[in-house]
Length: 137
Image 1 (cartoon, rainbow, N blue to C red):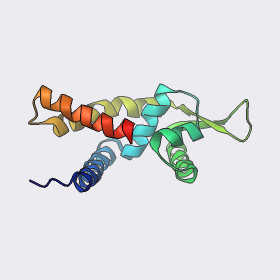
Image 2 (image 1 turned 90 degrees about the vertical axis):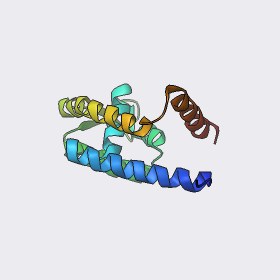
Image 3 (image 1 turned 180 degrees about the horizontal axis):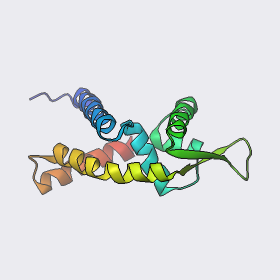
Image 4 (image 1 turned 180 degrees about the vertical axis):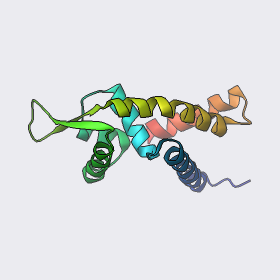
């Protein structure tokens, strides 16, 4: 058994992301990053682009491209911020809401696949470990 945490974490992240992205493209016609962005916008309708960039760990130029692709696909609408004309806010379109609903079974499937073969207690330990890494580094 390989015991190199950093290597295994990086390899696992890459493989899971690649698999999820392929499934998302096949099932929904959008990337897994776009699904994540849609879910974040849905949870904070009218969010600023910079806040979405922070939540997705993307730099502003990468987020500008992502938002542009999502807007051109009709998933989101970008509106100028009332308080700061230089800033933009994102709002889901009806198609964006539909994609989220269509993504829910895929998310359930991916989560089930990742936890397959693990007991509830083991999943709890894995979640504790991942939350530790996500919040304490």
